[in-house]
Image 1 (cartoon, one colour):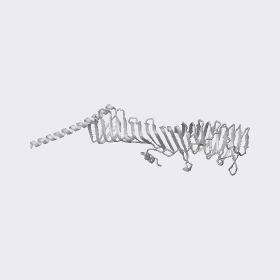
Image 2 (cartoon, helix red, strand yellow):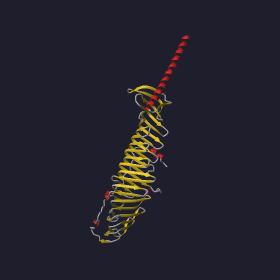
Image 3 (cartoon, one colour):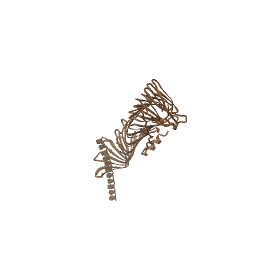
Image 4 (tube, one colour):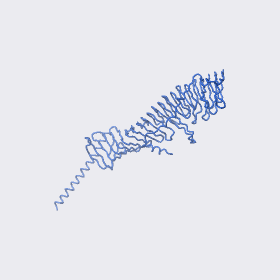
Length: 450
């Protein structure tokens, strides 16, 4: 009996020694983590209810494996993952099936590689970021956990309360709130009134955006009544487009052969600019503009657009207007030192030429057959009135020289000086751009439902 009692005491003593050694090992491991953290100047803590910590060799590297309900704290952010590996001889922590969060945002990913010296975290595999300001997803995201600056790569999707965007790659500067997207960039507004695409996009928190390389912009101006049949559509293609929306004033500037298709006015030019506060839409660089059956060629062209409607059209120097007659197909021709056109309810009502005017106006009979032409030149101004889109009256002032030309086979070929008629150059309606990715697009649509 005494021998059995002695044996039991030895066994109990062994258990106590084993428990002491196990506790000491855990304490040493925790201390090692904390001391290593201090040296790296990045706080990495192992939190409860993490179940298992063990020292192992992984591909020849000494590591600390962390398993079972893993909770880590990295630079103030809580990391929840299935498992993690901390390398003992280099500043690297790996985590798998990761969720990381702080009071500002949360991140999900398949894998995490975190450098404890540079504070660069690389998230790989179905990465998703959610914050109060935006939601983003990508195949891979490199993030500086100190500054929150990020580099997103592969199937990048991004949206906030006003806009959705996608690209192959993106750079985010959180402090300056600047965003750069590259590679087949696509974007649309939450209210479905604006779309754009480009090779690259840069934007910031002030309401400015720069589209570079094969830039495309599509805008819908919807009437307050909601009558979709009266929606004005404008599509712009250019090598470079600048957009700004600040203090309620919208601004557009485009260079590198901007081409416009619009229900109001289509055009080709070297430069294009627009400001919503003045309503001035300006084309420079020997532009051409088309509206219905009218072509206008000049050194510069200015349109005044107010309340979503074109009110005026001005041009110089020595603009040339060619208007195809709807009945005969013949070409009315007008030219002068400068041009002013007034529109009523979107239709041309009056046209004025300032000085040194020249007009060739084809006539037709009541049954809409060609009936000669009127040739008019003046040193002073000339005026033309329109009704239902057709010339109804014309006249001039100061040294008028006018005459009637009877109908003959040569009249259709008559041209005034500076004649320019190239309807084949009139832009055709562009195709509406389409998004490529869908992973978070449905969230964007749901979040903006009224």
